[in-house]
Image 1 (tube, rainbow, N blue to C red):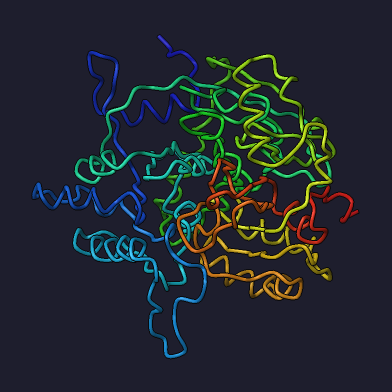
Image 2 (image 1 turned 180 degrees about the horizontal axis):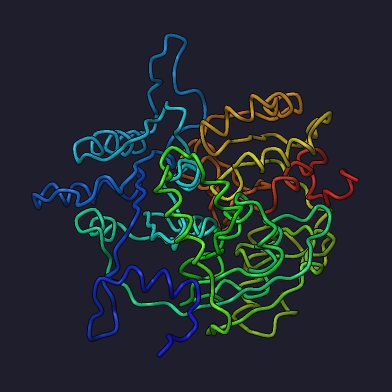
Length: 477
């Protein structure tokens, strides 16, 4: 008897089940484990105390990113510049020592390949279609952009994967987000995922793995797909997926850790089967039209607090749910905004172009296109561009993008997580606003008292020029 049609998520899940327990949970094999300095020290120490080894060091990749300063890392003589924050220095030193001790491939802080784990994974060909990928970081969902089932895990789970290369999980439900049509001028994948989160809410994907389907995603570059899947966690989902296709295969071919020769041909043959079968059913379905999406920004302290750039700050009374009313009022109090205020009247003092969401070469090109021949506004105090990896940095410099940023009055930095989160020197001062290409606008996310507005790289570049939240379509016609 023929099996029932399966979703992409079900196909990947079924291929990784080691055993299913009586309570419905399953032991799942993990193909790839990305490790950074923040969530790994305790896990490695627990292994050491228990006398355990890493089960599959060949399936593990360690990269420092969260705590690294994005200022120069070597002095004029080529010596490492000490990290001033003791806790950051300790975590980075621990990773540098732990990785070789346990036989794990380690990309050091000054290597050209260093970068944000979620940029490095696909860039190196470590992240592949149909694989299960975990990391002690919530935005691991990004790797779904190459067709991997990828999700964040906690420190105790990091230890479990290091020791066993498995995880005990409950299967999620499958959710379809289908977008048809074409995105309009000035509208990017970042605008689209912000719009989607605004529609479904930050709890809309809870308990689900989202598969993004439709014309728009099929036409996207892999870099844009990585951006979409990266923010699936902000819709409450366990992971995000986009089916691999010829675009994916072209992106991955000849990457350092991608299969090669006959193995490549076998891999592509398998990857080509990773599509949702006709007739497969999803537990939840959301259908949207691309034409309804405009350049989008956040106004509050949740990624679901979005509005088109031509819109206005909503009134708390406009929300039917009492808890939403209360949350909206608290957001406005924190953000220093008033109901009815036009988004284009909101001043910004800081600009951040970077993060695992938007620090790839495509993102930097988009920002540079807006900034070319222009200069940041006098009211913008601090504006930084942080490439997602050393290889992205090299590529940008070969294309002259660094000169565009510097000529426009922005700072060109070293790779790292940077101002996405207040865990390194790149913090937004209290009470000041930041036009940010990152993924979270929580209270204090970019530093105590910081006020974050999420947007695309092109929109952040536009804000740099005008000193206000600005419709990029007014600057690039």
